[in-house]
Length: 155
Image 1: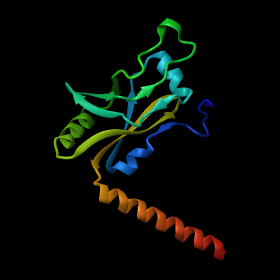
Image 2 (image 1 turned 45 degrees about the horizontal axis):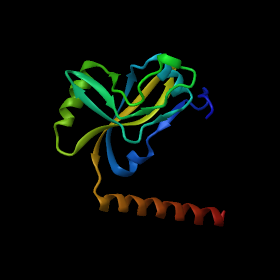
Image 3 (image 1 turned 180 degrees about the horizontal axis):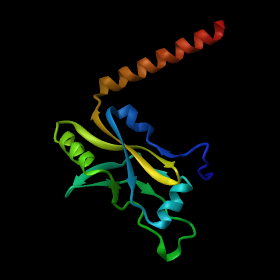
Image 4 (image 1 turned 180 degrees about the vertical axis):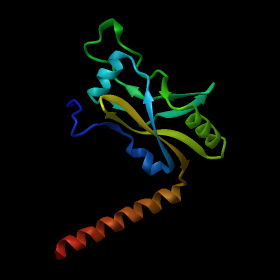
Protein backbone atom coordinates (compact mmCIF):
# COMPACT_ATOMS: atom_id res chain seq x y z
CA UNK A 1 0.00 0.00 0.00
CA UNK A 2 1.21 3.53 -0.66
CA UNK A 3 2.34 5.72 2.18
CA UNK A 4 0.15 8.59 3.37
CA UNK A 5 0.56 11.88 1.55
CA UNK A 6 -0.55 15.39 2.52
CA UNK A 7 -3.14 15.15 -0.27
CA UNK A 8 -4.74 12.06 1.26
CA UNK A 9 -4.15 12.03 5.03
CA UNK A 10 -6.70 9.26 5.79
CA UNK A 11 -4.92 6.09 6.92
CA UNK A 12 -7.93 3.84 7.66
CA UNK A 13 -11.72 4.00 7.54
CA UNK A 14 -14.39 2.01 9.35
CA UNK A 15 -17.05 1.87 6.62
CA UNK A 16 -18.96 -0.86 8.44
CA UNK A 17 -19.71 1.57 11.30
CA UNK A 18 -22.10 3.70 9.22
CA UNK A 19 -24.05 0.57 8.28
CA UNK A 20 -24.31 -0.92 11.77
CA UNK A 21 -24.68 2.22 13.90
CA UNK A 22 -26.36 5.61 14.04
CA UNK A 23 -23.64 8.17 14.72
CA UNK A 24 -24.68 10.50 17.55
CA UNK A 25 -21.52 12.52 18.26
CA UNK A 26 -17.94 12.51 16.96
CA UNK A 27 -14.70 13.22 18.84
CA UNK A 28 -11.08 13.63 17.77
CA UNK A 29 -8.53 11.80 19.89
CA UNK A 30 -4.79 11.39 19.84
CA UNK A 31 -3.49 7.85 20.21
CA UNK A 32 -0.47 6.63 22.15
CA UNK A 33 1.57 4.41 19.80
CA UNK A 34 5.02 2.83 19.74
CA UNK A 35 7.49 3.55 16.94
CA UNK A 36 6.76 0.43 14.88
CA UNK A 37 3.00 1.06 15.23
CA UNK A 38 3.45 4.56 13.78
CA UNK A 39 5.40 3.16 10.82
CA UNK A 40 2.71 0.52 10.18
CA UNK A 41 -0.03 3.15 10.40
CA UNK A 42 1.77 5.36 7.89
CA UNK A 43 1.95 2.32 5.58
CA UNK A 44 -1.85 2.04 6.04
CA UNK A 45 -1.64 -1.42 7.62
CA UNK A 46 -4.59 -0.75 9.99
CA UNK A 47 -8.00 -2.40 10.35
CA UNK A 48 -10.59 -0.56 12.46
CA UNK A 49 -13.54 -2.85 11.71
CA UNK A 50 -13.77 -4.71 15.03
CA UNK A 51 -12.45 -1.92 17.23
CA UNK A 52 -14.19 -0.33 20.21
CA UNK A 53 -13.36 2.16 22.97
CA UNK A 54 -13.72 1.56 26.71
CA UNK A 55 -13.39 4.03 29.58
CA UNK A 56 -11.39 2.55 32.46
CA UNK A 57 -10.07 4.38 35.55
CA UNK A 58 -10.70 7.78 33.99
CA UNK A 59 -8.82 6.93 30.77
CA UNK A 60 -10.01 5.90 27.32
CA UNK A 61 -8.56 2.76 25.72
CA UNK A 62 -8.87 1.45 22.17
CA UNK A 63 -9.35 -2.31 21.91
CA UNK A 64 -9.37 -4.86 19.10
CA UNK A 65 -7.83 -2.63 16.40
CA UNK A 66 -5.40 -4.55 14.22
CA UNK A 67 -2.17 -2.70 13.40
CA UNK A 68 0.03 -5.06 11.39
CA UNK A 69 3.59 -5.90 12.39
CA UNK A 70 6.13 -3.57 10.79
CA UNK A 71 8.32 -5.45 8.29
CA UNK A 72 11.63 -3.96 9.43
CA UNK A 73 10.81 -3.88 13.14
CA UNK A 74 12.81 -7.01 14.16
CA UNK A 75 12.63 -7.75 17.91
CA UNK A 76 11.23 -4.30 18.76
CA UNK A 77 7.92 -4.96 17.01
CA UNK A 78 4.59 -4.43 18.77
CA UNK A 79 1.67 -6.70 19.63
CA UNK A 80 -0.88 -6.61 16.84
CA UNK A 81 -4.10 -6.15 18.89
CA UNK A 82 -2.93 -4.59 22.14
CA UNK A 83 -4.95 -2.01 24.07
CA UNK A 84 -3.90 1.52 23.11
CA UNK A 85 -4.51 4.60 25.23
CA UNK A 86 -6.45 7.46 23.67
CA UNK A 87 -5.45 11.02 24.43
CA UNK A 88 -8.54 13.07 25.31
CA UNK A 89 -9.28 15.94 27.65
CA UNK A 90 -10.66 14.98 31.06
CA UNK A 91 -13.99 16.70 30.36
CA UNK A 92 -14.34 14.75 27.09
CA UNK A 93 -13.68 11.47 28.89
CA UNK A 94 -16.27 12.38 31.56
CA UNK A 95 -18.81 13.22 28.87
CA UNK A 96 -18.15 9.94 27.03
CA UNK A 97 -18.40 7.96 30.26
CA UNK A 98 -21.74 9.60 31.01
CA UNK A 99 -23.04 8.84 27.50
CA UNK A 100 -21.91 5.21 27.73
CA UNK A 101 -24.10 4.68 30.78
CA UNK A 102 -27.19 5.02 28.54
CA UNK A 103 -28.67 1.86 27.06
CA UNK A 104 -27.48 0.76 23.62
CA UNK A 105 -24.64 3.24 23.30
CA UNK A 106 -21.10 2.37 22.33
CA UNK A 107 -17.86 4.08 21.30
CA UNK A 108 -16.26 3.00 18.05
CA UNK A 109 -13.38 4.28 15.90
CA UNK A 110 -14.49 5.80 12.58
CA UNK A 111 -11.21 6.73 10.92
CA UNK A 112 -7.50 7.15 11.51
CA UNK A 113 -5.76 10.04 9.81
CA UNK A 114 -2.75 12.34 9.83
CA UNK A 115 -3.08 15.88 11.12
CA UNK A 116 0.02 18.07 11.07
CA UNK A 117 2.23 14.98 11.15
CA UNK A 118 0.44 13.36 14.10
CA UNK A 119 -1.81 10.30 13.94
CA UNK A 120 -5.34 11.09 15.11
CA UNK A 121 -8.36 8.87 15.59
CA UNK A 122 -11.94 9.96 15.03
CA UNK A 123 -14.18 8.14 17.49
CA UNK A 124 -17.94 8.35 17.73
CA UNK A 125 -20.61 7.71 20.29
CA UNK A 126 -23.14 5.52 18.46
CA UNK A 127 -26.47 3.81 18.93
CA UNK A 128 -26.88 0.36 17.38
CA UNK A 129 -29.24 0.05 14.41
CA UNK A 130 -31.85 -2.68 14.19
CA UNK A 131 -31.94 -4.91 11.13
CA UNK A 132 -34.94 -2.97 9.79
CA UNK A 133 -33.08 0.34 10.19
CA UNK A 134 -30.15 -1.08 8.23
CA UNK A 135 -32.45 -2.16 5.38
CA UNK A 136 -34.10 1.28 5.34
CA UNK A 137 -30.69 2.96 5.06
CA UNK A 138 -29.81 0.71 2.11
CA UNK A 139 -33.13 1.54 0.41
CA UNK A 140 -32.52 5.28 0.78
CA UNK A 141 -28.98 4.96 -0.59
CA UNK A 142 -30.20 2.98 -3.63
CA UNK A 143 -32.98 5.50 -4.29
CA UNK A 144 -30.46 8.36 -4.17
CA UNK A 145 -28.14 6.53 -6.58
CA UNK A 146 -31.02 5.86 -9.01
CA UNK A 147 -32.05 9.52 -8.90
CA UNK A 148 -28.48 10.69 -9.57
CA UNK A 149 -28.17 8.22 -12.44
CA UNK A 150 -31.42 9.45 -14.03
CA UNK A 151 -30.39 13.10 -13.67
CA UNK A 152 -27.04 12.31 -15.29
CA UNK A 153 -28.69 10.71 -18.36
CA UNK A 154 -30.84 13.78 -19.02
CA UNK A 155 -28.01 16.31 -18.76
